[in-house]
Structure formats: structure tokens, C-alpha cells
Length: 437
Image (cartoon, rainbow, N blue to C red; front, side, top):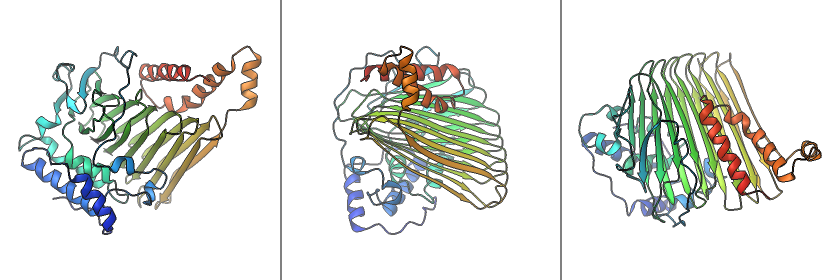
């Protein structure tokens, strides 16, 4: 059994809240190693307890909508848009209300350089490579910052995808989360193992539930490359907490981007650990929020524990009509991690006086030969630039949209594949047009 981090004993109120959340849950059926991993995660969860509003990393985001024993129902939303990335040729995998939809999915074996399975199938037996990864990075990511919802996920996830990239994948993999139940409350856990020199791209889209909890654990070996692009949108009632844990070997590369549109509460947590020299990790995101019910939180923790590694965090948020955005980002450089290059920027564009952006950038450095920086800014539309566009015949709403797209461009540029980035930009244009004025 993996050792749990040494958390302080939870208060009685926290313990009661945790047990209430667990009261209606049972650990899914698994083989011997799966049962052990789930029980280990359950023990960790009980040791730390579910988050409370006064917890250091939850002070700016109220966790109570995520703590309830049942998901609060959210109205279903008709989606008349064409599926995103539907023309890319990516292999399609569909989960509806957290349940694998074989009829809507492609043949999981129809891709070269990658082996794909359902998590439920991988955990059914007693022998599988997933044994060494499931819950391993999540457990490591619990220190120094506890992540209770990730432990809850490892204990109770019912399904997900297991991806073993052994070479350069011939196609991208597209996971689509669909929702047909107003109260769907899925818990999904996915694993990605990238062999030395292999490369794979994972695309994610859709809401998947009135409340959804996901974990992605990615182990990228020496020289491997993993690209992760995700769109969260088209479901204003969504409550989501997502977690991405990535471990990089020598000369490995991890590039992750998330675009969020709509949603009631979204908390995206990303944890990156450099364990091999000369690796690169870029973590980026953009969100556009409209209305007092919109609350979006990006929480990132990057640990440098190797030589000459490069990390970038680029996050942009556009907020209007009382929306709230949060960014918490930390770069930890351990002793001996010399020649580290760590960059972090978080910026918001507030389109009215009622919206707010809350930022907590952090650096913690124990090496003396590094180049690390962080910054955070908040501002409004530049009236001079807006006047310039209007003076040249551009209507005010269109001029504002152009400036919003220009503001978000730096984050979108973090996507290596230009076609994927362009489709997200087109979706952004559509979202802005629907909310003009």
C-alpha cells in the first residue's frame, strides 16, 4: 500500500461531511490490485477529509457544490453545433452520463502505435500494466497540497480510458463526454503511458454530467511526447472538478490546453512533476464567463526536480456580468534542479465592474541557478483601442469581440497543432457572437 501524506487529523465537521459524501457510494468491482488501489485512495480521503471553504487552496472557490452526496440536477441543453474536432480523423470514444457508449464509439483497436482499453476492463483482472500507474501519480500529487476530490475519484471511478502509446500514434484520440440525465454524476479516471520516444494526442470535449469528477494520470517516459487539448463548454449548469497529473522523464514533453465556456462551477487542477533532465511542460488555459453563476478556477502546481527543465503556465480569462475567475499557480524548484526555466502568467479581462479575478501566483525556489518569473494582471477593454476600431467603421460589439480574441491569442498559441487551435478560436467567435451585447 502506498503511504498517504501526513495530513492533520480532520475536524469532526469535516469527517461528517466526508462520510455523508461516501454514504451512498460503493467501491466498484475490480481485480485484487484494483481493490487495493481503491481502498488506499479511500483511506487517504478519510485521512484528509473533503475540502472546506476555509482551506488554503479553497478560499477563493467554495467546494460545497462539489461536496454534496448527490449532484444538483441541471437542465439539459440542446446542442445544435457540429461536434468539435469531428473532421480531424481522430478515433472517437464516447461516455454518456459516465457510461461507455460502444455504439457511438469507434473500434478501440483501429489505431496504430497505441493500445486503448476501457478502465473497467483493465481493472477486472489481476495482471495489467495499469497496476503500477492507477492512483500512483494522484497519490504523489497529494503532497504538499491535499487534493481530496482526486482521492475520491481514484476510490470510486467507474470507468475511463487506458492508453498505452508505444510509438507515434497514427491518429489522435478523441474522448467525448455526453449527458442525457439531468442528475448525472459521473466519476471517470483515465491513464496514459507514453513509452520512450512515443507520441500521442488526447482530445476531450463535452460536459458529461450535472456534476463530473475526472482524473487523468500521464506517465511520459524519456523522449516521449503527450499533447492534451480539452474543451469544456455548452452546458451552463455544469459543476466540474478535474485533475491532471503528469510525470516527465528525461527530454519528455507535455503540452496541455483547456478552453472553458459556460459552466456553473469549474475547478481544473493540474499537477506536473519533472523527474528527468531537459524536459518541457506547457500548461495553458483560456476561459470566457458570463453571469454571476459562472465561477472558474485554475489551480496548477509544477515541481522541478531535475536539471535544465522548462515549464510554462499561461492562463487568460474574460469575464462579464458578475462572473468570477480564479488562478492559483505555483512553481516549486527543488534543491539541485539547476538551470530551471519556469514561467507563469495569469491575466484577466473584465468587461464590467461586477466581475472579479482572484489570483495567487507563487514561487518556491531552493536552487541558485534558475530563471523563474510570475506575473498577474487584471484590466478592462482599452478605450483607446476600442475607439480606434470604431472610428474605422467596426461596430462596438464586433470591436470588443476582436479585442477579446486578441487577448486570448497568447494562450491559444500554446496549442502545438494549428488546426486544433483554429477550431477552438472559431468556437470562441461563435460563443461571443451569441452573447453580443
